[in-house]
Length: 619
Image (cartoon, rainbow, N blue to C red; front, side, top):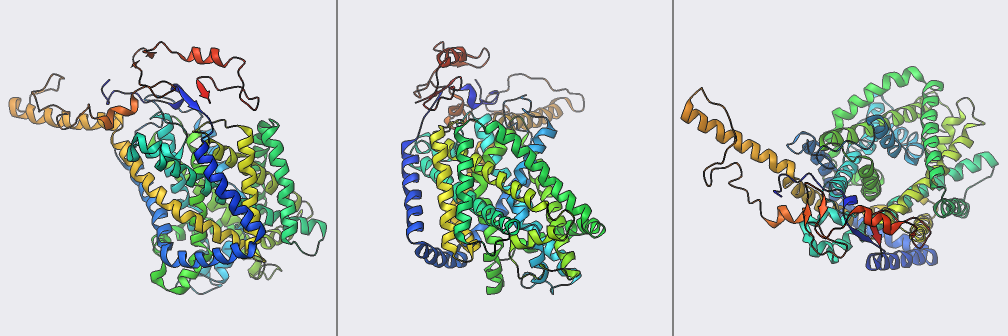
Protein backbone atom coordinates (compact mmCIF):
# COMPACT_ATOMS: atom_id res chain seq x y z
CA UNK A 1 0.00 0.00 0.00
CA UNK A 2 1.17 3.51 -0.78
CA UNK A 3 2.32 5.22 2.47
CA UNK A 4 -0.07 8.10 1.82
CA UNK A 5 -3.06 5.72 1.94
CA UNK A 6 -2.31 3.88 5.18
CA UNK A 7 -5.24 4.60 7.54
CA UNK A 8 -3.07 4.27 10.62
CA UNK A 9 -2.53 1.37 13.01
CA UNK A 10 -3.60 0.96 16.62
CA UNK A 11 -1.47 -1.06 18.99
CA UNK A 12 -4.43 -3.33 19.83
CA UNK A 13 -4.54 -4.51 16.20
CA UNK A 14 -1.05 -5.98 16.39
CA UNK A 15 0.28 -9.29 17.60
CA UNK A 16 2.34 -8.23 20.57
CA UNK A 17 4.03 -10.43 23.14
CA UNK A 18 4.30 -8.75 26.52
CA UNK A 19 6.33 -9.77 29.54
CA UNK A 20 8.68 -8.40 32.13
CA UNK A 21 11.70 -6.69 30.57
CA UNK A 22 14.32 -8.16 32.83
CA UNK A 23 16.98 -5.66 31.79
CA UNK A 24 14.83 -2.55 32.34
CA UNK A 25 13.29 -3.86 35.55
CA UNK A 26 16.44 -5.43 36.96
CA UNK A 27 18.80 -2.49 36.49
CA UNK A 28 16.26 0.16 37.53
CA UNK A 29 15.09 -1.81 40.56
CA UNK A 30 18.68 -2.40 41.70
CA UNK A 31 19.54 1.31 41.43
CA UNK A 32 16.39 2.42 43.28
CA UNK A 33 16.70 -0.14 46.07
CA UNK A 34 20.36 0.82 46.54
CA UNK A 35 19.38 4.50 46.75
CA UNK A 36 16.64 3.79 49.30
CA UNK A 37 19.02 1.74 51.45
CA UNK A 38 21.59 4.55 51.29
CA UNK A 39 18.94 7.08 52.29
CA UNK A 40 17.64 5.03 55.21
CA UNK A 41 21.08 4.09 56.52
CA UNK A 42 22.76 7.48 55.99
CA UNK A 43 20.12 10.19 55.38
CA UNK A 44 22.59 12.95 56.27
CA UNK A 45 24.94 11.71 53.58
CA UNK A 46 22.13 11.79 51.00
CA UNK A 47 21.13 15.25 52.17
CA UNK A 48 24.67 16.65 51.98
CA UNK A 49 25.38 15.04 48.62
CA UNK A 50 22.10 16.21 47.09
CA UNK A 51 22.61 19.76 48.41
CA UNK A 52 26.09 19.94 46.88
CA UNK A 53 24.94 18.52 43.56
CA UNK A 54 21.85 20.74 43.65
CA UNK A 55 23.92 23.93 44.02
CA UNK A 56 26.14 22.91 41.13
CA UNK A 57 23.20 21.89 38.96
CA UNK A 58 21.26 25.10 39.54
CA UNK A 59 24.22 27.25 38.59
CA UNK A 60 25.32 25.23 35.58
CA UNK A 61 22.24 23.49 34.18
CA UNK A 62 19.25 25.47 35.44
CA UNK A 63 18.94 26.97 31.96
CA UNK A 64 18.14 23.50 30.60
CA UNK A 65 14.93 23.30 32.63
CA UNK A 66 13.84 26.69 31.28
CA UNK A 67 14.58 25.67 27.70
CA UNK A 68 12.56 22.46 27.99
CA UNK A 69 9.52 24.23 29.44
CA UNK A 70 9.63 27.00 26.81
CA UNK A 71 10.18 24.41 24.06
CA UNK A 72 7.11 22.45 25.15
CA UNK A 73 4.91 25.55 24.93
CA UNK A 74 6.34 26.64 21.58
CA UNK A 75 5.94 23.17 20.03
CA UNK A 76 2.31 22.79 21.14
CA UNK A 77 1.42 26.23 19.75
CA UNK A 78 3.13 25.26 16.50
CA UNK A 79 1.34 21.89 16.27
CA UNK A 80 -2.04 23.48 16.99
CA UNK A 81 -1.75 25.85 14.04
CA UNK A 82 0.51 23.92 11.68
CA UNK A 83 -0.23 21.63 8.75
CA UNK A 84 -0.13 18.72 11.24
CA UNK A 85 -3.15 19.97 13.19
CA UNK A 86 -5.67 17.77 11.33
CA UNK A 87 -3.76 14.55 11.98
CA UNK A 88 -5.85 12.15 14.04
CA UNK A 89 -4.45 10.59 17.22
CA UNK A 90 -5.87 7.34 15.94
CA UNK A 91 -6.78 5.84 12.59
CA UNK A 92 -8.25 7.92 9.78
CA UNK A 93 -11.90 8.61 10.52
CA UNK A 94 -11.72 7.13 14.03
CA UNK A 95 -14.12 8.82 16.43
CA UNK A 96 -13.01 9.85 19.93
CA UNK A 97 -13.47 7.16 22.55
CA UNK A 98 -15.03 9.61 25.01
CA UNK A 99 -17.41 12.52 24.57
CA UNK A 100 -15.84 15.96 24.75
CA UNK A 101 -17.43 16.58 28.16
CA UNK A 102 -16.15 13.29 29.62
CA UNK A 103 -12.73 13.88 28.08
CA UNK A 104 -12.44 17.34 29.63
CA UNK A 105 -13.80 16.04 32.94
CA UNK A 106 -11.10 13.34 33.09
CA UNK A 107 -8.45 15.85 32.09
CA UNK A 108 -9.82 18.09 34.81
CA UNK A 109 -9.21 15.26 37.26
CA UNK A 110 -5.60 15.05 36.11
CA UNK A 111 -5.21 18.79 36.74
CA UNK A 112 -6.39 18.56 40.32
CA UNK A 113 -4.00 17.25 42.95
CA UNK A 114 -2.37 17.89 46.27
CA UNK A 115 -0.49 20.85 44.82
CA UNK A 116 -3.47 23.21 44.87
CA UNK A 117 -3.87 22.50 48.59
CA UNK A 118 -0.19 22.62 49.48
CA UNK A 119 0.75 25.69 47.43
CA UNK A 120 -2.66 27.22 46.56
CA UNK A 121 -3.03 29.51 49.61
CA UNK A 122 0.67 29.91 50.49
CA UNK A 123 2.48 30.56 47.20
CA UNK A 124 0.55 33.69 46.17
CA UNK A 125 0.78 34.95 49.77
CA UNK A 126 4.57 34.49 49.86
CA UNK A 127 5.02 36.18 46.49
CA UNK A 128 2.84 39.04 47.74
CA UNK A 129 4.97 39.48 50.88
CA UNK A 130 8.28 38.85 49.09
CA UNK A 131 7.96 39.41 45.33
CA UNK A 132 10.46 37.91 42.88
CA UNK A 133 13.69 39.94 42.57
CA UNK A 134 13.69 42.93 40.21
CA UNK A 135 9.89 43.12 39.97
CA UNK A 136 7.71 45.16 42.37
CA UNK A 137 7.57 46.35 45.99
CA UNK A 138 5.98 43.99 48.55
CA UNK A 139 2.44 44.36 49.90
CA UNK A 140 1.22 46.68 47.15
CA UNK A 141 -1.53 46.32 44.52
CA UNK A 142 1.27 45.64 42.04
CA UNK A 143 2.66 42.81 44.18
CA UNK A 144 -0.85 41.33 44.52
CA UNK A 145 -1.13 40.89 40.77
CA UNK A 146 2.54 39.92 40.37
CA UNK A 147 1.99 37.22 43.00
CA UNK A 148 -0.90 35.71 41.08
CA UNK A 149 0.91 36.03 37.74
CA UNK A 150 3.94 34.21 39.17
CA UNK A 151 1.76 31.43 40.61
CA UNK A 152 -0.14 31.06 37.34
CA UNK A 153 3.20 30.94 35.52
CA UNK A 154 4.36 28.01 37.66
CA UNK A 155 1.11 26.04 37.37
CA UNK A 156 -0.29 27.11 34.00
CA UNK A 157 0.54 26.96 30.32
CA UNK A 158 4.17 25.82 30.50
CA UNK A 159 3.35 22.80 32.67
CA UNK A 160 0.36 21.66 30.66
CA UNK A 161 2.01 22.27 27.31
CA UNK A 162 4.76 19.87 28.38
CA UNK A 163 2.22 17.27 29.51
CA UNK A 164 0.40 17.74 26.19
CA UNK A 165 3.64 17.30 24.27
CA UNK A 166 4.43 13.95 25.90
CA UNK A 167 0.79 12.83 25.90
CA UNK A 168 0.36 13.74 22.24
CA UNK A 169 3.57 11.99 21.23
CA UNK A 170 2.54 8.84 23.12
CA UNK A 171 -1.04 8.86 21.79
CA UNK A 172 0.24 9.29 18.23
CA UNK A 173 2.82 6.55 18.67
CA UNK A 174 0.37 4.07 20.23
CA UNK A 175 -2.87 4.69 18.34
CA UNK A 176 -1.65 5.83 14.91
CA UNK A 177 1.73 4.13 14.52
CA UNK A 178 0.77 0.92 16.35
CA UNK A 179 3.63 0.95 18.86
CA UNK A 180 3.52 -0.39 22.39
CA UNK A 181 2.96 1.92 25.37
CA UNK A 182 6.57 2.81 26.10
CA UNK A 183 8.40 6.14 26.15
CA UNK A 184 11.02 4.55 23.92
CA UNK A 185 8.37 3.85 21.25
CA UNK A 186 8.21 7.56 20.45
CA UNK A 187 11.93 7.48 19.56
CA UNK A 188 11.64 4.77 16.90
CA UNK A 189 11.96 7.25 14.03
CA UNK A 190 15.06 8.73 15.70
CA UNK A 191 16.81 5.61 16.99
CA UNK A 192 15.70 3.06 14.41
CA UNK A 193 14.26 -0.34 15.30
CA UNK A 194 17.55 -1.92 16.44
CA UNK A 195 18.50 0.82 18.91
CA UNK A 196 14.92 1.38 20.12
CA UNK A 197 14.68 -2.29 21.06
CA UNK A 198 18.24 -2.20 22.36
CA UNK A 199 20.32 -0.13 24.75
CA UNK A 200 19.12 3.35 23.73
CA UNK A 201 15.41 2.54 24.00
CA UNK A 202 15.78 0.73 27.29
CA UNK A 203 17.79 3.62 28.70
CA UNK A 204 14.91 5.98 27.84
CA UNK A 205 12.40 3.68 29.57
CA UNK A 206 14.61 3.35 32.65
CA UNK A 207 14.99 7.13 32.87
CA UNK A 208 11.21 7.50 32.53
CA UNK A 209 10.65 5.08 35.40
CA UNK A 210 13.18 6.87 37.62
CA UNK A 211 11.67 10.29 36.79
CA UNK A 212 8.18 9.01 37.59
CA UNK A 213 9.39 7.47 40.84
CA UNK A 214 10.93 10.68 42.13
CA UNK A 215 8.23 13.00 40.77
CA UNK A 216 5.42 10.98 42.32
CA UNK A 217 7.39 10.44 45.54
CA UNK A 218 7.65 14.24 45.90
CA UNK A 219 3.86 14.45 45.59
CA UNK A 220 3.37 11.69 48.15
CA UNK A 221 5.76 13.49 50.49
CA UNK A 222 3.73 16.71 50.18
CA UNK A 223 0.54 14.74 50.88
CA UNK A 224 2.05 13.24 54.01
CA UNK A 225 3.22 16.65 55.26
CA UNK A 226 -0.26 18.12 54.80
CA UNK A 227 -2.04 15.14 56.33
CA UNK A 228 0.36 15.36 59.28
CA UNK A 229 -0.61 19.00 59.85
CA UNK A 230 -4.29 18.04 59.64
CA UNK A 231 -3.82 15.23 62.14
CA UNK A 232 -2.00 17.67 64.43
CA UNK A 233 -4.94 20.10 64.33
CA UNK A 234 -7.58 17.42 64.78
CA UNK A 235 -5.75 15.56 67.54
CA UNK A 236 -4.32 18.59 69.32
CA UNK A 237 -0.78 17.20 69.11
CA UNK A 238 2.08 19.62 69.75
CA UNK A 239 4.25 18.79 66.74
CA UNK A 240 4.56 16.54 63.68
CA UNK A 241 7.95 14.86 63.35
CA UNK A 242 9.33 12.90 60.43
CA UNK A 243 8.53 9.75 62.41
CA UNK A 244 4.85 10.69 62.41
CA UNK A 245 4.99 11.50 58.69
CA UNK A 246 6.59 8.14 57.93
CA UNK A 247 3.92 6.41 60.03
CA UNK A 248 1.20 8.22 58.04
CA UNK A 249 2.86 7.13 54.80
CA UNK A 250 3.05 3.54 56.06
CA UNK A 251 -0.69 3.46 56.76
CA UNK A 252 -1.51 4.93 53.34
CA UNK A 253 0.93 2.50 51.70
CA UNK A 254 -1.00 -0.41 53.19
CA UNK A 255 -4.18 1.10 51.71
CA UNK A 256 -2.47 1.39 48.32
CA UNK A 257 -1.33 -2.27 48.43
CA UNK A 258 -4.87 -3.39 49.30
CA UNK A 259 -6.15 -1.36 46.36
CA UNK A 260 -3.55 -2.82 44.01
CA UNK A 261 -3.94 -6.51 44.88
CA UNK A 262 -7.56 -6.92 45.93
CA UNK A 263 -9.27 -5.82 42.74
CA UNK A 264 -10.91 -2.76 44.28
CA UNK A 265 -9.38 -0.44 41.69
CA UNK A 266 -12.83 0.29 40.26
CA UNK A 267 -13.93 1.38 43.74
CA UNK A 268 -10.85 3.56 43.97
CA UNK A 269 -11.81 5.22 40.68
CA UNK A 270 -15.25 6.02 42.05
CA UNK A 271 -13.56 7.35 45.18
CA UNK A 272 -11.31 9.46 42.97
CA UNK A 273 -14.35 10.98 41.24
CA UNK A 274 -15.80 11.78 44.65
CA UNK A 275 -12.47 13.32 45.56
CA UNK A 276 -12.53 15.65 42.57
CA UNK A 277 -16.08 16.69 43.48
CA UNK A 278 -15.02 17.42 47.06
CA UNK A 279 -12.00 19.40 45.83
CA UNK A 280 -14.22 21.51 43.58
CA UNK A 281 -16.61 21.86 46.46
CA UNK A 282 -13.86 23.17 48.74
CA UNK A 283 -12.75 25.72 46.12
CA UNK A 284 -16.37 26.85 45.68
CA UNK A 285 -16.85 26.94 49.46
CA UNK A 286 -13.85 29.24 49.91
CA UNK A 287 -15.07 31.39 47.02
CA UNK A 288 -18.53 31.83 48.59
CA UNK A 289 -17.54 31.95 52.28
CA UNK A 290 -14.41 34.04 51.66
CA UNK A 291 -13.95 37.52 50.17
CA UNK A 292 -16.20 36.83 47.16
CA UNK A 293 -16.31 40.33 45.68
CA UNK A 294 -12.54 40.69 45.99
CA UNK A 295 -12.04 37.33 44.24
CA UNK A 296 -14.48 38.18 41.44
CA UNK A 297 -12.38 41.22 40.61
CA UNK A 298 -9.11 39.37 41.09
CA UNK A 299 -9.79 36.53 38.64
CA UNK A 300 -9.72 38.60 35.41
CA UNK A 301 -7.02 40.91 36.79
CA UNK A 302 -4.80 37.95 37.66
CA UNK A 303 -5.25 36.39 34.22
CA UNK A 304 -4.42 39.68 32.52
CA UNK A 305 -1.31 40.13 34.68
CA UNK A 306 -0.23 36.57 33.83
CA UNK A 307 -0.56 37.25 30.10
CA UNK A 308 1.22 40.60 30.43
CA UNK A 309 4.19 39.20 32.38
CA UNK A 310 4.52 35.79 30.71
CA UNK A 311 7.45 36.58 28.42
CA UNK A 312 9.33 38.42 31.18
CA UNK A 313 8.93 35.52 33.62
CA UNK A 314 10.06 33.04 30.99
CA UNK A 315 13.29 35.01 30.52
CA UNK A 316 14.44 34.96 34.16
CA UNK A 317 17.69 33.07 34.72
CA UNK A 318 21.21 33.34 36.20
CA UNK A 319 21.82 36.30 33.90
CA UNK A 320 19.57 38.33 36.23
CA UNK A 321 21.91 37.77 39.18
CA UNK A 322 22.28 35.58 42.25
CA UNK A 323 19.02 36.75 43.86
CA UNK A 324 17.08 35.60 40.83
CA UNK A 325 18.97 32.29 40.81
CA UNK A 326 18.07 31.75 44.47
CA UNK A 327 14.42 32.49 43.72
CA UNK A 328 14.50 30.10 40.76
CA UNK A 329 16.03 27.37 42.90
CA UNK A 330 13.34 27.72 45.55
CA UNK A 331 10.38 28.08 43.23
CA UNK A 332 10.55 27.93 39.44
CA UNK A 333 13.24 25.26 39.02
CA UNK A 334 11.48 22.99 41.51
CA UNK A 335 8.20 23.30 39.65
CA UNK A 336 9.83 22.78 36.26
CA UNK A 337 11.61 19.70 37.60
CA UNK A 338 8.41 18.41 39.18
CA UNK A 339 6.45 18.78 35.95
CA UNK A 340 9.26 17.22 33.89
CA UNK A 341 9.39 14.25 36.25
CA UNK A 342 5.60 13.84 36.01
CA UNK A 343 5.48 13.86 32.18
CA UNK A 344 5.64 10.05 31.68
CA UNK A 345 2.84 9.52 34.22
CA UNK A 346 0.48 12.34 33.18
CA UNK A 347 1.43 11.95 29.51
CA UNK A 348 0.44 8.27 29.53
CA UNK A 349 -2.89 9.12 31.19
CA UNK A 350 -3.69 11.91 28.73
CA UNK A 351 -2.71 9.67 25.81
CA UNK A 352 -5.11 6.94 26.88
CA UNK A 353 -8.13 9.25 27.08
CA UNK A 354 -7.39 11.26 23.91
CA UNK A 355 -7.60 8.57 21.25
CA UNK A 356 -9.46 9.80 18.17
CA UNK A 357 -8.89 13.52 18.77
CA UNK A 358 -7.20 15.65 16.17
CA UNK A 359 -3.81 16.97 17.11
CA UNK A 360 -5.14 20.55 16.90
CA UNK A 361 -8.04 19.93 19.30
CA UNK A 362 -5.77 17.94 21.60
CA UNK A 363 -3.12 20.68 21.76
CA UNK A 364 -5.58 23.50 22.41
CA UNK A 365 -7.85 21.81 24.95
CA UNK A 366 -5.17 19.91 26.89
CA UNK A 367 -3.12 23.07 27.31
CA UNK A 368 -5.86 25.61 28.04
CA UNK A 369 -8.55 23.80 30.07
CA UNK A 370 -6.42 22.51 33.00
CA UNK A 371 -4.54 25.83 33.01
CA UNK A 372 -7.80 27.75 33.46
CA UNK A 373 -8.94 25.39 36.23
CA UNK A 374 -5.72 25.82 38.18
CA UNK A 375 -5.78 29.59 37.67
CA UNK A 376 -9.23 29.70 39.27
CA UNK A 377 -8.15 27.48 42.18
CA UNK A 378 -4.99 29.46 42.89
CA UNK A 379 -6.83 32.78 42.63
CA UNK A 380 -9.51 31.63 45.08
CA UNK A 381 -7.12 30.08 47.63
CA UNK A 382 -4.27 32.56 47.20
CA UNK A 383 -6.51 35.61 46.97
CA UNK A 384 -8.30 34.57 50.15
CA UNK A 385 -4.98 34.12 52.01
CA UNK A 386 -3.80 37.57 50.87
CA UNK A 387 -7.13 39.16 51.86
CA UNK A 388 -6.84 37.57 55.33
CA UNK A 389 -3.31 38.95 55.64
CA UNK A 390 -4.56 42.42 54.77
CA UNK A 391 -7.26 42.04 57.44
CA UNK A 392 -4.59 41.16 60.01
CA UNK A 393 -5.87 37.64 60.70
CA UNK A 394 -3.55 35.22 62.48
CA UNK A 395 -1.55 32.72 60.44
CA UNK A 396 -0.99 34.86 57.35
CA UNK A 397 2.18 36.78 58.13
CA UNK A 398 4.29 34.51 55.93
CA UNK A 399 6.11 32.84 58.81
CA UNK A 400 4.06 29.63 58.70
CA UNK A 401 4.55 26.63 56.48
CA UNK A 402 2.40 25.87 53.44
CA UNK A 403 0.34 23.30 55.31
CA UNK A 404 -0.18 25.67 58.25
CA UNK A 405 -1.38 28.40 55.89
CA UNK A 406 -3.88 25.98 54.32
CA UNK A 407 -5.49 24.95 57.60
CA UNK A 408 -5.35 28.53 58.96
CA UNK A 409 -7.39 29.63 55.93
CA UNK A 410 -10.11 27.09 56.64
CA UNK A 411 -9.96 27.92 60.36
CA UNK A 412 -11.12 31.47 59.59
CA UNK A 413 -14.07 30.25 57.51
CA UNK A 414 -17.37 28.63 58.58
CA UNK A 415 -17.48 24.89 59.38
CA UNK A 416 -13.91 25.03 60.71
CA UNK A 417 -14.59 21.99 62.85
CA UNK A 418 -15.54 19.83 59.88
CA UNK A 419 -13.36 21.03 57.00
CA UNK A 420 -10.02 19.61 58.34
CA UNK A 421 -11.49 16.08 58.26
CA UNK A 422 -12.65 16.56 54.66
CA UNK A 423 -9.23 17.91 53.65
CA UNK A 424 -7.46 14.95 55.29
CA UNK A 425 -9.77 12.55 53.45
CA UNK A 426 -9.18 14.29 50.11
CA UNK A 427 -5.41 14.25 50.60
CA UNK A 428 -5.40 10.58 51.62
CA UNK A 429 -7.36 9.56 48.52
CA UNK A 430 -5.06 11.65 46.32
CA UNK A 431 -2.13 9.81 47.90
CA UNK A 432 -3.60 6.35 47.23
CA UNK A 433 -4.86 7.03 43.69
CA UNK A 434 -1.62 8.76 42.64
CA UNK A 435 0.44 5.86 43.95
CA UNK A 436 -1.89 3.35 42.28
CA UNK A 437 -1.90 5.05 38.85
CA UNK A 438 1.82 5.88 38.79
CA UNK A 439 2.71 2.32 39.80
CA UNK A 440 0.70 0.91 36.88
CA UNK A 441 2.52 3.27 34.49
CA UNK A 442 5.89 2.14 35.82
CA UNK A 443 4.75 -1.47 35.61
CA UNK A 444 3.87 -0.86 31.96
CA UNK A 445 7.25 0.75 31.26
CA UNK A 446 9.07 -2.23 32.77
CA UNK A 447 6.84 -4.87 31.11
CA UNK A 448 7.44 -4.13 27.41
CA UNK A 449 4.41 -1.82 27.25
CA UNK A 450 1.90 -4.20 28.86
CA UNK A 451 -1.19 -2.06 29.69
CA UNK A 452 -2.10 -4.50 32.47
CA UNK A 453 1.22 -5.36 34.16
CA UNK A 454 1.47 -8.01 36.85
CA UNK A 455 0.24 -6.89 40.24
CA UNK A 456 3.43 -7.88 42.01
CA UNK A 457 5.39 -5.51 39.72
CA UNK A 458 2.88 -2.72 40.37
CA UNK A 459 3.15 -3.20 44.14
CA UNK A 460 6.94 -3.29 43.96
CA UNK A 461 7.11 0.08 42.22
CA UNK A 462 4.58 1.48 44.66
CA UNK A 463 6.75 0.42 47.59
CA UNK A 464 9.78 1.98 45.89
CA UNK A 465 7.88 5.26 45.61
CA UNK A 466 7.13 5.19 49.31
CA UNK A 467 10.76 4.39 50.04
CA UNK A 468 11.99 7.34 47.98
CA UNK A 469 9.46 9.66 49.63
CA UNK A 470 10.78 8.57 53.03
CA UNK A 471 14.37 9.20 51.91
CA UNK A 472 13.36 12.65 50.64
CA UNK A 473 11.84 13.51 54.02
CA UNK A 474 14.85 12.19 55.92
CA UNK A 475 17.35 13.90 53.62
CA UNK A 476 15.62 17.24 54.16
CA UNK A 477 15.95 16.96 57.93
CA UNK A 478 13.80 19.51 59.71
CA UNK A 479 13.03 21.21 56.39
CA UNK A 480 11.41 18.22 54.72
CA UNK A 481 10.44 20.26 51.67
CA UNK A 482 14.08 20.97 50.79
CA UNK A 483 14.78 17.25 50.44
CA UNK A 484 11.81 16.87 48.11
CA UNK A 485 12.93 19.84 46.02
CA UNK A 486 16.62 19.02 45.74
CA UNK A 487 16.21 15.40 44.68
CA UNK A 488 13.35 16.12 42.27
CA UNK A 489 15.41 18.75 40.45
CA UNK A 490 18.48 16.50 40.25
CA UNK A 491 16.46 13.70 38.66
CA UNK A 492 14.66 15.98 36.20
CA UNK A 493 17.78 17.53 34.67
CA UNK A 494 18.96 14.38 32.81
CA UNK A 495 15.36 13.55 31.81
CA UNK A 496 15.16 17.01 30.20
CA UNK A 497 17.52 15.72 27.52
CA UNK A 498 15.10 12.85 26.84
CA UNK A 499 12.26 15.33 26.30
CA UNK A 500 14.30 17.35 23.82
CA UNK A 501 14.96 14.14 21.88
CA UNK A 502 11.23 13.33 22.06
CA UNK A 503 10.44 16.63 20.32
CA UNK A 504 12.75 15.76 17.43
CA UNK A 505 11.39 12.22 17.11
CA UNK A 506 7.74 13.36 17.27
CA UNK A 507 8.21 15.96 14.55
CA UNK A 508 9.99 13.41 12.35
CA UNK A 509 7.06 11.03 12.76
CA UNK A 510 4.55 13.72 11.87
CA UNK A 511 6.51 14.73 8.77
CA UNK A 512 6.02 11.23 7.32
CA UNK A 513 2.45 10.69 8.53
CA UNK A 514 0.04 9.52 5.79
CA UNK A 515 -2.09 12.65 6.25
CA UNK A 516 1.00 14.86 5.90
CA UNK A 517 2.03 12.96 2.76
CA UNK A 518 -1.46 13.40 1.26
CA UNK A 519 -1.41 17.11 2.07
CA UNK A 520 1.98 17.55 0.38
CA UNK A 521 0.73 15.66 -2.70
CA UNK A 522 -2.43 17.78 -2.78
CA UNK A 523 -0.50 21.05 -2.65
CA UNK A 524 1.87 19.91 -5.40
CA UNK A 525 -0.93 18.52 -7.55
CA UNK A 526 -3.05 21.68 -7.32
CA UNK A 527 -0.05 23.91 -8.01
CA UNK A 528 1.04 21.86 -11.04
CA UNK A 529 -2.49 21.62 -12.39
CA UNK A 530 -3.17 25.35 -12.11
CA UNK A 531 0.12 26.26 -13.82
CA UNK A 532 -0.48 23.77 -16.65
CA UNK A 533 -4.12 24.85 -17.02
CA UNK A 534 -3.17 28.50 -17.35
CA UNK A 535 -0.41 27.70 -19.83
CA UNK A 536 -2.56 25.51 -22.06
CA UNK A 537 -6.10 26.87 -21.67
CA UNK A 538 -5.90 30.33 -20.11
CA UNK A 539 -8.96 31.09 -18.00
CA UNK A 540 -11.01 28.15 -19.30
CA UNK A 541 -9.67 25.03 -17.58
CA UNK A 542 -10.73 22.50 -14.96
CA UNK A 543 -8.76 20.02 -12.91
CA UNK A 544 -8.98 16.27 -13.50
CA UNK A 545 -6.85 13.40 -12.21
CA UNK A 546 -4.66 11.67 -14.76
CA UNK A 547 -1.19 10.22 -15.11
CA UNK A 548 1.46 12.94 -15.28
CA UNK A 549 4.60 12.91 -17.36
CA UNK A 550 7.58 11.18 -15.79
CA UNK A 551 9.11 13.44 -13.14
CA UNK A 552 6.24 15.96 -13.17
CA UNK A 553 3.68 14.32 -10.87
CA UNK A 554 2.51 15.41 -7.42
CA UNK A 555 4.97 13.05 -5.77
CA UNK A 556 7.89 13.52 -8.13
CA UNK A 557 10.16 14.71 -5.32
CA UNK A 558 9.00 12.05 -2.84
CA UNK A 559 10.25 8.46 -2.62
CA UNK A 560 7.18 6.50 -1.56
CA UNK A 561 9.19 3.27 -1.35
CA UNK A 562 11.77 4.56 1.14
CA UNK A 563 12.08 2.49 4.30
CA UNK A 564 11.50 5.46 6.61
CA UNK A 565 7.96 5.86 5.26
CA UNK A 566 7.05 2.21 4.70
CA UNK A 567 8.69 0.15 7.44
CA UNK A 568 6.36 1.33 10.20
CA UNK A 569 3.20 -0.21 8.75
CA UNK A 570 4.70 -3.58 7.82
CA UNK A 571 2.95 -6.26 9.92
CA UNK A 572 4.83 -8.91 11.92
CA UNK A 573 3.94 -11.92 14.02
CA UNK A 574 4.62 -12.28 17.75
CA UNK A 575 8.28 -13.10 17.07
CA UNK A 576 8.88 -10.07 14.83
CA UNK A 577 8.81 -12.00 11.54
CA UNK A 578 7.26 -10.02 8.69
CA UNK A 579 3.80 -11.20 7.60
CA UNK A 580 1.75 -10.06 4.60
CA UNK A 581 -1.33 -8.02 5.48
CA UNK A 582 -4.20 -6.80 3.30
CA UNK A 583 -5.30 -3.37 4.52
CA UNK A 584 -8.49 -3.55 2.44
CA UNK A 585 -9.79 -6.85 3.83
CA UNK A 586 -7.91 -6.84 7.12
CA UNK A 587 -6.60 -10.39 6.46
CA UNK A 588 -3.20 -11.60 7.65
CA UNK A 589 -1.05 -13.52 5.21
CA UNK A 590 -0.55 -16.44 7.59
CA UNK A 591 -4.28 -16.74 8.32
CA UNK A 592 -4.10 -15.35 11.86
CA UNK A 593 -7.11 -13.44 13.17
CA UNK A 594 -8.04 -11.76 16.47
CA UNK A 595 -10.56 -14.58 17.00
CA UNK A 596 -7.66 -17.02 17.25
CA UNK A 597 -6.16 -14.98 20.05
CA UNK A 598 -9.49 -14.77 21.85
CA UNK A 599 -9.94 -18.54 21.69
CA UNK A 600 -6.42 -19.01 23.04
CA UNK A 601 -7.17 -16.61 25.87
CA UNK A 602 -10.42 -18.24 27.02
CA UNK A 603 -9.75 -19.55 30.49
CA UNK A 604 -6.16 -18.40 30.29
CA UNK A 605 -5.02 -16.22 33.16
CA UNK A 606 -1.72 -14.60 33.94
CA UNK A 607 0.35 -15.42 36.99
CA UNK A 608 -1.70 -13.08 39.20
CA UNK A 609 -5.08 -14.49 38.20
CA UNK A 610 -6.01 -11.68 35.83
CA UNK A 611 -7.70 -12.66 32.57
CA UNK A 612 -5.33 -12.22 29.66
CA UNK A 613 -6.06 -9.40 27.23
CA UNK A 614 -7.41 -10.81 23.92
CA UNK A 615 -4.87 -10.62 21.12
CA UNK A 616 -2.03 -9.55 23.41
CA UNK A 617 0.25 -12.36 24.46
CA UNK A 618 2.34 -12.38 27.60
CA UNK A 619 5.57 -14.25 28.09
